[in-house]
Amino acid sequence: MNPDPTTAATVASVAPVSAVVSETVAAPYIQGLADDALVYAQRLGEWISRAPQIEEDMALANVGLDLLGQARVLLTRVGELDGTGRTEDDLAYFRDEREFRNVHLVEQERAGFGFEMARLLTFASYQCELYAALRRSSDPVLAGVAEKALKEVTYHRDHATQWVLRLGDGTEESHRRMQEGLEAVAPYVAELFDDDETARAAAEAGVGVLPSTLRDAALGHVTAVVEEATLTEPGAPRWRSRGGRAGIHSRPMGYLLAEMQHIARSHPGASW
Amino acid sequence: MTEAAPVVKSAVAQAISDIPDPEVPVVTIEDLGILRHLEVDESNRRVSVTITPTYSGCPAMEAIEHRVVHEAVRHGYTCSVETRLSPAWTTDWMSERGRVRLREFGIAPPERGAGARGSGPVALSLQVRQVACPQCGSTDTEELARFGSTACKALRRCRACREPFDQFKAI
Image (cartoon, rainbow over all chains, first blue to last red; front, top):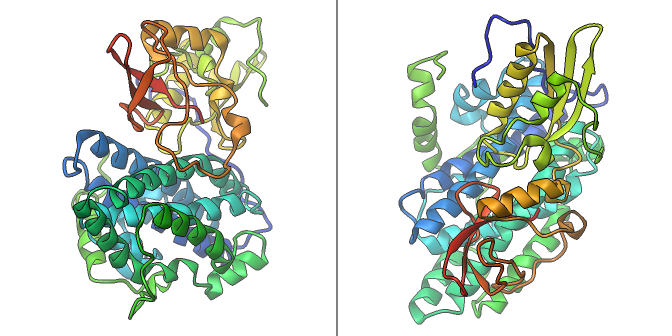
């Protein structure tokens, strides 16, 4: 199975860097999307052996694996575009907290299963609209990832949808805990749809899409599911998260990075 | 680029086409539609291969890439492997032979038409599709888990013969 390392064989990578996209516009935008996927993949992996049933261990691990795959291609692209030549591993393991551009929703600690399904429903609904729009990105790699990943995140959204329906329209106890999950997620929802300078520049260049334009469709799906599940849409939260895309994170982020990065940092250059 | 690799093949092309999928070894990468393009440049002893992942995070891709290079080198060629994401892989690219082999192995092949279905609205129901049991052929089957032993499979059970089985998810 192992290729002979002494041969002249080469393994080429993905598409060439387009001249249209500049390092100041495309790279930081794609980094935000990559970090969302990477950090949520890490959180979902924590469910393995902790989910209510073994099939759900597999499901959440598989959702995380899809997101990790998306993050790997996107991070590789960031390293190509930003001129630093960093690899996906450099970017995942050797950046500090302030250099991560993910939203707060994905970095929050693993809580109850109701919280996770509310988070997954929200995030997957957002990603469905995001990737559907990004299939038309002027960046060929981002467009390729979007086309591929849209099928995956549609499946994630469907999975979360089924659980929210089952729990919301289930027993009194499951209904209560699913409702609590929705309430706990609510303060982190608005940040997904914030337009910042990075997103505006990327949208203008045809690389990205304005997050605010995704809001109605994404939350429309969430609302439909919540109603069907006999749950109540949470009212306007008393506070809301912000700052993730600028590198300002909440308390759980540092702990997450410590766990995710410590082996790579303890043994720099190690491979297996 | 939905056409299969050339029909008349040199030894190296045949060897690469016949590489088994690391996770479902009864089918080849050609059967699965992972192998998108294969070109042999005899004068320069060089092979160019394009592969596409089934899922973004498919852990088998690196193993497949290494195996392609290995087969090329074994036959005395240098090799370049390009991983292409677009157009996105769909189970509609799976060959008829691949479907038969999956069924014989006990894995229900994916339904056709997944590529055309696209990303339309998701039905708010728990059971939508009819899948035949690969053991007894009954369509009286139920889904046990939407995510199975690998990213590309779901787990089902036959109500007629009571056997559980993997189903290749249609995407």
